[in-house]
Image 1 (cartoon, rainbow, N blue to C red):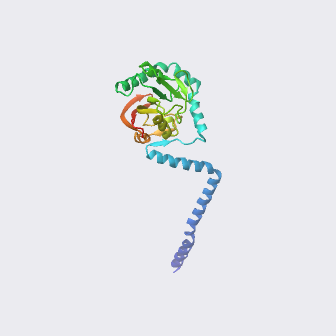
Image 2: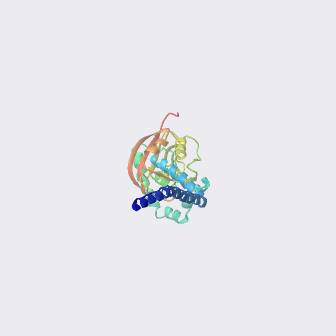
Image 3: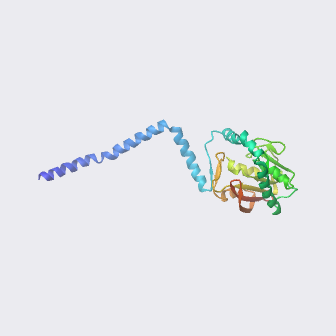
Length: 259
């Protein structure tokens, strides 16, 4: 009998203690969240917004690297690389001959494939100090110019690839290996299609394996999202390359009709 009474008392105690545990735990978690939001409100919200959109973009094959407070901040970040005196010295000295030689090999092959000719009016987008332009002229494409945030006459003029400083339907051929630096890929591609002549060719060198640097503004995981961005052009060739850390060459031809 004494044993039965003890069991009943124990059951009665548990009846009142156990239901309280979830409440205590819930109260503890709620207070912890309130403290967290109070101490780190903007950090948490900013991370949530950017990480969720990044996941969606990654599922589609491209991820935008958020984190800029303004477009001006993004431009300044890009200028930190382009205006770096040590890098510019390397680009114009020991890197110059090697890169001109490699780029001229790429362009010569494109010429042999019929995508480029000596009569082409050509643009290099994100040309830095003009190595690609020098390579184009080396193989005979003399009407060539580069565009970058920092000009380097006579090879490179000032321009933002999100808003090219050229009239519509200006170029027969456009080349770029800086797609990963585009904060707004749709504007980057839109400007190419705007300034390309009908039937003109665009060649992009990209990385599909994350081999980019801290100045990249997007990460590309497949060709598919890039193809979708081109609304008035068709893919005519895709191949693997070894292009200074970039692994894929994609050739687009703009439709000849203007619709």
